[in-house]
Image 1: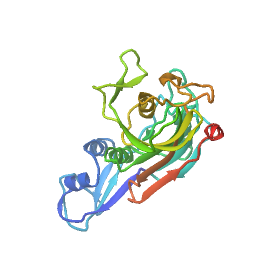
Image 2: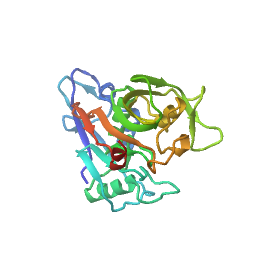
Image 3: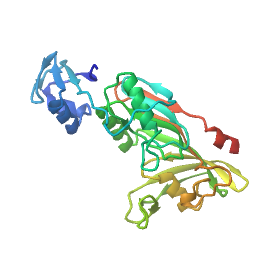
Length: 291
């Protein structure tokens, strides 16, 4: 399998190590290149990071092939691909499917099916899921095809250059049109699964826009500015409007047998080309029928 590689042009003279850092290649990635069978070439000649670049030099980083995770079984299954290129895979996850295997659901996860897709198409990478969804949540998922691209997407998330938007159905009508929930989230002392708003938690911020009020419910659009576990679920429950179907955080299952939450949009900058990308997803049929 041909290894993944990227080529850059030096814009000015200086140490190669510094140029690689400016291009977003982390020290961890450089270590994997050095010790994992990769190469760094300048004008087609192998060099070390101590090499001094001249303006206009062509720098090629050849990344080592990654081994598939031995504990992840590749399984046949339907994969709803929204977008795919050499470095990115954007897919639709249906509700009631794990993103990755768990003790309760060891088979049939999105990761199992993507692993089979990677095997079938000779993609030399382990799985790098950049935007994980809960089992009940449906919608768009972003997957990187190698460690370096995953690192670059994570940087975008930290710098708020990547945006994820959701739609949800919540209990109760909401008087405000737009507002922001800023409340720290941490693990609940009495549970290994549940989270809660707590002073010693991690900073978390969710933007909320009310699309329409229904009889006893509200249809809302949400944007995550941070990516804490169960963030949307915890924040909405915290303000007294839990997700419909989310019985872990106070929602009722009389209308739908899962939390009514769908990732409708992912916006990011392509980690190689720099092109702005935006992907859309319509609500799953069960949520659509409720509206």
